[in-house]
Structure formats: structure tokens, C-alpha cells
Length: 145
Image (cartoon, rainbow, N blue to C red):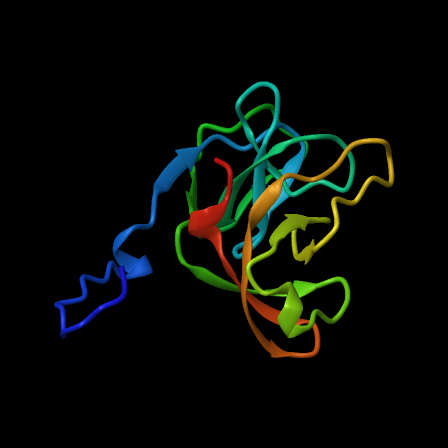
């Protein structure tokens, strides 16, 4: 129903809704701060991979180097739920706003489900706004995890 008078608008700021997880990092894996993080079949954190169907978990808020080792006990802080500035594989337009975006690796997203190896990356969120060119903001509250 259309408004006929002023109303008090309740707004929940994204910064108050950031789910934070501490995850173990998979063996032989180094995850850099800011990387797109997915979860492997063992429940360990991995970089947003270019192969395989792994569920998006959030963004690394720290670095863990686990190369040459078994699964680490050093937890990686993984966070999502905010507007995140990311790079897109091609420049979007205003008609793309609100569409789902999917990771293509640990630092890039796409409007299309990328199937280079027969499997697609999972949804990171929806395209919120375009900064310029391929620089965008993604609303990660709208991811499927």
C-alpha cells in the first residue's frame, strides 16, 4: 500500500550483520587477506577456486599460510554480510544491478556462472552498485550461504 504519511524507517546497517566464522585452512593452501573464501568437502577454508563446486563462505580477514602442511589449527577469520568492493570479469551496466554474481577465483566475480571445468563457482551476492568500469560493490548478505 502506498504511503499517505511519513513513517519511521527502520534500517539495519550491513556492518551490524557481519557473520564471522573461524575456519581451519586446508592443507597446502595459503589464503591472503581479502580473498574470496570457499569451503571444501572436509569443511576447511580454501581460496575461491577456479575449478570445482565449492560453497562461498565469505572474505578472509587475515592471512594464513598453510603450504606444505596438513590442515592447520590456526583459524582464519572469515566474514561476510557487508557491501564488498570487488572486481568483475567484464564491465556491467545499470541493467545488471540486483543480479547475482558468482566467484571466478579468489579475487574476481562474474554475472555468469563460469563453467570452465564443468563446475561453477557459487554465488557471492548480488550486484549492488557500479563504481567504474569493472569495479563494483556486491551485497554479500544476499549470498546463498
